[in-house]
Amino acid sequence: MTKQEKTLVINELAEKLKSNSYFYFADASGLTVAQINDFRRLCFQRGVEYNVYKNSLIKKALETLETDYTSFNEVVLKGFTGIIFSKESGNLPAKVIKEFRKSKGTKPVLKGASIDTGLFIGNDTLDTLSNLKSKYELIADVIMLLQSPAKNVVSSLQSGKNKLAGIVKTLAERQVA
Image 1 (spheres, rainbow, N blue to C red):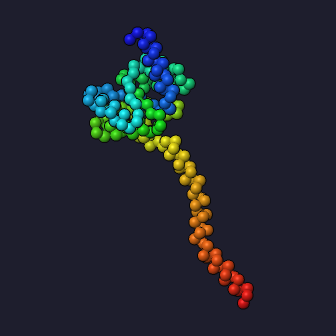
Image 2 (cartoon, one colour; image 1 turned 30 degrees about the vertical axis):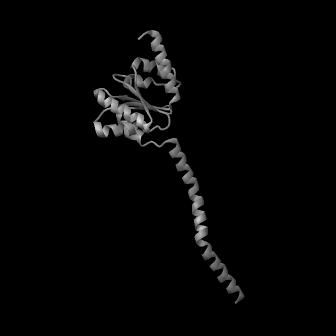
């Protein structure tokens, strides 16, 4: 690969990293070609993109970003490295990795992830990442919490309207008598 080709790949990768808020680094070494193809197919079906890059090119592309990724250099960017990109959901790549592992074994191994500039390192963070809620799920939870008190007040008023009318009627009858 010539220097010009490397520069082109670095620029393309840097742009892809900037445009995706969520990306995971995975090690799929040891998988057969058929298994890698199955993993790529699963990624495509779930709406995420999986590509393999040289670690030196990834390092240079990460240097162009505003977030400090130097902690990735020692642990994450060693050996075979594939990147899973997700535009919509921070937990989707983790779910794809877990789903693939159920049928194919222990690979790919999560090396690290960047979720809205938050850094996660190591395979032990996979369960945590797969349980993250998306932005839309969090918004829905907040809306539900905000609506809950209003629903309680409305239901209390509706269930008590007959009682309230009865109490007012009883008090009115007592004052007449």
